[in-house]
Image 1 (cartoon, rainbow, N blue to C red):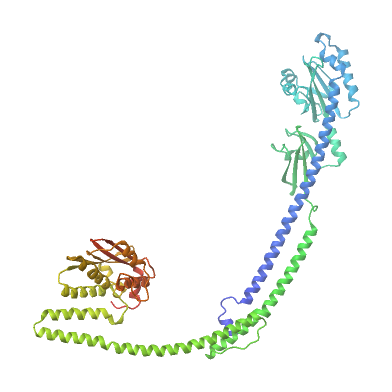
Image 2 (image 1 turned 90 degrees about the vertical axis):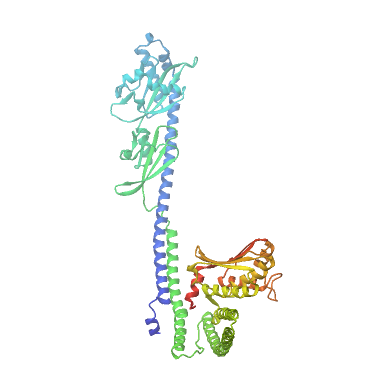
Length: 593
């Protein structure tokens, strides 16, 4: 076994191949396990952080929205205060310090019940204003006078809208951000606009909300990127387009660690909430990972067990079986082997080998008997070769006698007949060069001219390149015979027989054309498509033409090698198409040319 599998085993043995396969599978499974574990862990961690962030942002968004609605309710109370309405509706000449103070006190009475309002500003139509906290603000007088900031407020027709930092007309001196609720104030009776109110909510409201919830990873901002409350360090993470419907999540890096940035808009207000959540161990499905680990261990154990099983029950018995076969090879005795196999399949292989040995022994005996029979047949063939030689010698002797007697035509006829039979027999060859096949036709037609005189002329157009190509013997002679007996003679006038050969697109084209009576299409179809019957003939036609067609088909291995073209009373042309490869192969098969 060492010699055989050491010397011949340049290829990998089954056992080593199987070991490599098992190791490869285990490595692939381990890598797949690690990759799958990483993917599952990352996916679950991300899903957990996203779910937690979305839950926090939704709850916080609802709280802010609820607080803003409460402040809007307060603003509705403010704009209905009688003292404020009196201030707004009074003529400019009637407005004095006392009226302004009364309006301011009326607003402050309402605000005492609502915390978190930093200031309330009320503007008359002539832009005279009162405020509850004037000294803490700076004002943009030019913007106030332009009135452009009022257009959006008027368009809401008395409904409250939320803006940031007083719409730019005022700012706190200390720079603290504000959320502003704006309303147009309409006269209850005439519904005409009599002024505008701006209620500024301190950012401390939102900061206190975050402090109570203990959120230090949240930043509340305006949609314009301005800071309102929370972790100011997150302002730089905000980008245009983040505000919108729903919650948007994005992976970012914070202090070289991956984190999730979640952004949520507060209803239709110009406020967004950002939360930065670091990825931790929360959400990792340890239960699933433990199950996968157990399955991996089970797989490895099964792989090892399978490797041991294959070695003991398959590869080792195959080696033993191979040793016995090698022993038969070295001794030269084709004997059956007797080895105990561990499985029915290997036992079946052993039985099949033994049956093969028995069959081979039977075939050897049969071949020996056939060889003896072939040798006897070859002896008979050698004996039969004597007969043609006797015919040639006899014709030659009669030819000399005729020449001595002055019968030159008889001598020439015998010469032609001798040449015909020499080429006809062709030393027993089944295939011959085309040049010899054409010579057979020439000799045959020369003999027919001696019999029928000048009722036909023969013409040859043989391409020089085709003369050495190999074709089956006697494929042209039956065609010219058919041309004479079934074509020209039946027409009753002198005719012409033309034999042609040429190479077209890598194929040899042989054709025989006569100017005889021609054939109808049903006759052509019968010749090309009829089946041979038990008598060896087809209905209405001689077997010679049909048999020649069948020989060509068998020789070429195809039915599509024959073309017959004819016109009644004019001509018939039969063409054989033999591939050049088939014709050249005849030379390589040892034919003499």
